[in-house]
Length: 368
Image (cartoon, rainbow, N blue to C red; front, side):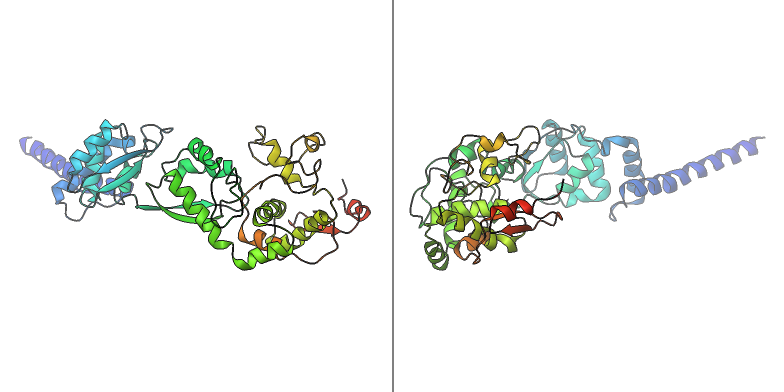
């Protein structure tokens, strides 16, 4: 009987050993990836068991709605110290859970010193991986063709630049000298040249605006200026018209023809009648959550504003958006046409149909 008990004890030990050295590491490897190669057998078992015990704490964020905050890591700082400070900063729920994952994966040996942008909306695993790549010193800041200033401002919180939308709009809405421009505009609307700007993270608002205005000036070549002058426009007027062309077009290849329509209208004193100018005047559409209300109602077209080119002939007082190079070129070098009208094609292709007379414009209307 005694021998039977001994056999059972030995069998239990073998089962426990099999679980410890087989199932637990295999399970941890399946869930969290393979352990670091430098860990010994006992360490692999120990840290595998720890990770399995932590369970959902590794993958659940501390605060799913938490915002980004800066976090610095000094050269030579220990993983233990980093984990402790992350918990103190309310970026993670438990420092030991992070430390166990770092050691298990070997990521504790690859943490980089530098500046990070971290959020409690990240899981502990996500933060552990993020610590392997310090925030780069320079970041890309993108301005898209056709954006108005408020849309640029809205992109700032996720840009990596420490500039608030309110500060940006306040600075952009003050008189600023644009290099080689005939006038100093009361606002930079229209002169935020669409591009990808590679900027240091510590860029100030003044440095940002100076960089953008210089980029605009560099793209306004002598050939473009000569083209604007040939259309009877100075650079400011040309940018204003180009901003309308930009918003009216979906297909860039149509921009020279669209520009020709507006230039033809200007030559005879005819109202430009452009929907985007009304959209700009109306401002933010809270119903559709856009700065460009569409479609416009008949009442919208009666909205009294100097930007409403249905009510007031000639160019609006300032640009309504920030045109790209192709729109600027289309104003400088428009197509030669006799068209005074255009409207969206009925096939939803993004193209337009053009007309010389109002009667033809009406006949081009899509069937309801």
